Amino acid sequence: MRVEIFSNNLIQVNTYFIIKDNKCLLIDPGSNAKKILKFINDECLEVEGVVLTHAHFDHFYSANEILLTLNVPLYVHSKGVEALYDPDKNISSAFRAIIPLKLDKNILVSTINEETRQIGSFKLRVFHVPGHSPCGICLYFPEEKMVFSGDSLFKLSIGRTDFYNGNEEQLLTNIKNKLLRLPEDTIVYPGHGPKTTIGYEIKNNLYIR
Image (cartoon, rainbow, N blue to C red; front, side, top):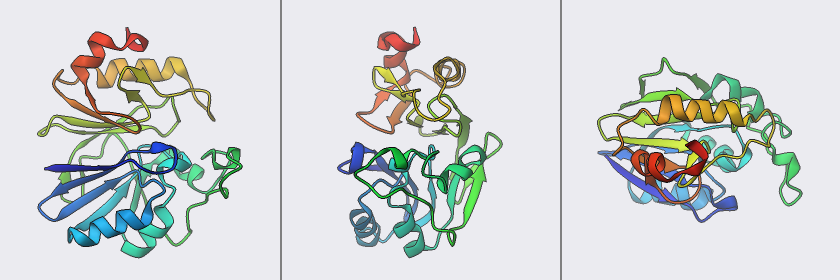
């Protein structure tokens, strides 16, 4: 399995391509829709779905253009569906430099939760990790020892909890009870910033001690 990362976009969101043969899951499409679509076309990828680690606007800024072009489902935790259509809850209304964002009603939205074990061709586990947002999830691929942590866990930091329905105590509890129990050599791919490992964060991240 191969991972490609695009991060040169609005608010430096890490957009991930998880690729196996020519199949692909796209995680958190930031604002660079044209670059994303060009990469998919150049690599001859069959995108089986777009997955959101949570429903804050910066993580699905280009979802309308990409999903309407590719005609594939958008996967999100059930607690994030309402925010897709509400600029106050996806916090796009708080940024004066952009037009408040709503997901196009023609896009198929499928919900995922901790019972989910597969999306398309990809076997995975879904951890519900609210705290940064009520719908926060992390995508764990046990065979590859990698987890996509969204805005829950960063290198030497954790996600902000001062947004709509954020809760620091809840976030810390979920990180400790779910993510930090993964093997220490698990690679962590966060929603912003550089990758890290579970072991490195256990030893060095002051927020989770």
